[in-house]
Length: 286
Image (tube, rainbow, N blue to C red; front, side, top):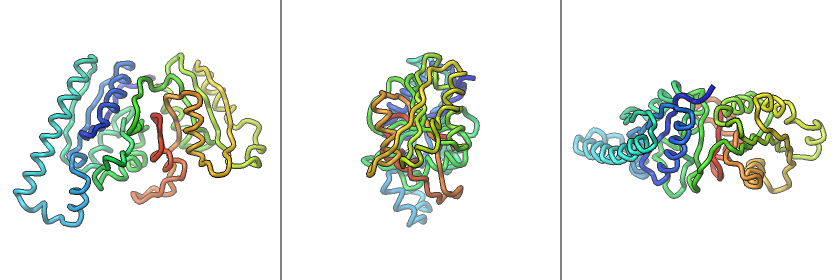
């Protein structure tokens, strides 16, 4: 089954174009409906949002509230123009949603009823408002939908032609692989890689990716199974990204791991490092 309903989160940042380009191409490929979601809270400057957390009484001042709302609406209108033009230019069906509610519920509400959510990696040079600093984690844990993360640097003309799967025998990893199947075309090349942290671990299983590689091959995909053992000083996330670069992957598929299901969860090390250092689009599921 292909993708039929996509959501792309837009915030007026310089990386909106990259996110939108990927989302539009996927919508074209799958003849899918594309929703451009622009929550008001994402349009607040990062420093002002932080200040408001300490001075909520500012919101009680009518002049201040009107000014913030007016600035957000003006910015959103510009984002909407670009979104609608992208739909028109590429003959893609879709809708625009400017949501004035709380950020996490607004995004989760839309994510629950879609096939895929396209988000951007946090850009250290353009930090998000404080309320959005755990947005990716919150969506992963609460929406039950796969998230496609677009790096804050680089251009990505294809997504899903050459796929690297970071495989572990876990529920999250299996979920991510199957959520990624619609992105893998009939001519896609797929590499299933397991990253091991010691030679001892590597010797316990001849080829831990063999089962999932055979399963994907039954879907008609060209699949190869691989393993790598990380050396001292190289993190598993870096090993995945290095391997993705070596094979020219245009999509990395991994499970999203957390040590807690609360909003204050601490992400597993691999997931956290990938969120910081990704150089290729990453599909995550939890």
